[in-house]
Image 1 (cartoon, rainbow over the protein chains, first blue to last red):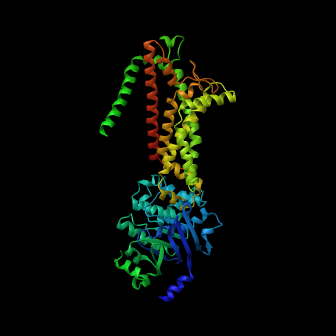
Image 2: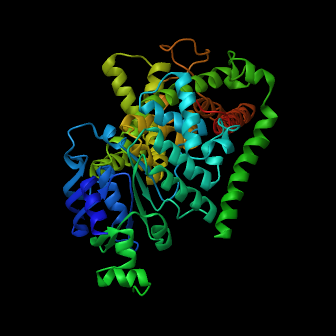
Length: 260
Length: 270
């Protein structure tokens, strides 16, 4: 196990060093230092309000939208600190596809939800657009269900379909990281399974960071696990390490369900 | 609660009923399709076409202008100034303040500007004054709609790599179509129904509007002049004019609602 762990460290995609986030006097994240391995599913576990979502938002600088948040530290992605990115942050965000708790389809047609993302990426020719829209919808296992209703507003889809549409849209900007914030919490079991299977399939091409509080889901698909509590990282390690041999008392309590 | 609801309803019904009852007697095809003839205000023939067309062109002009200026302001406040919450708060406060200024003050301001610029009472001066008057209504109504856009949608739009203007013009406007239409409608209603702001600025005339630089008649002023007449028939015509004004607002309201719904149903391209 130790060996595997070392190997992961060597290929980390994202490394976070001493990340602190505060809103006024309230410290949301405290001295976070973690490694997120490339082409693996990293699951961030923890009870609600422990700062998981904020951590995710630091990665693609959505924290910029909230002026009250003070972010310090380093978030290195492929060796660049995104918190002081010189490069255009709009382009930076395209390296990461975001899947949120509830799907938020853009207020336009199913087709244009994907086409919008592609246009941002610079695809303009009609034929290319169409080809890629089809391909991304297929990748998200949605094409067969929507191929006859591409011109309908995306809001008419079921919530499970909307989440897959959002996944397709996220993939369409051609990212190398997928950030998922409890993406299955609003979905029925079958839709959830759909998304989970998709993640396992996608990890060969993408680095996936999944925030969840569903233990079973984490156990099923995680390669690497980070356990957070009250804004701090309590424990991190491989799936086996954290689930079978947790070192910290807090982790044991949380996994055992005896958490207060 | 129930009593006050019914009370309000009763008053509304009474207003509409009295306009209808008195107006329907006096309304005629001639009244809708001709301009006042010589002795119109003493009970002779003619109509209020001058005021109908004048009011419509004035209100359409002012609403259009206020929309063109107002939409970017509302978008700017909500998409570009998110990091400056205090500034946005101040802007909102000022807009609410100017919203409350009586329209006669806008009329007086417009009038003094006209003297300063050397413009006579005209459709143009009327449009500009009414634009100023409805601008706060337009901006704040759109602003209130834009504020309700879910954070999740905003985050989703940015996470795709959209910049602020793309989020503002492609996402915000689409998400708020029906609210924006309501804002336009509200402004139009205020624009067409206001008498005080056009009293000095648009003037009054018995002619049809034919140029931006000529005075125009408006329905509220036409109602005022007819009500002021000592002849009972002319007073009834005032109610008929009020009926016309109410119907115009009704038609515009129904049309815009239909438009909003249609926009949601049909395909959306960009």
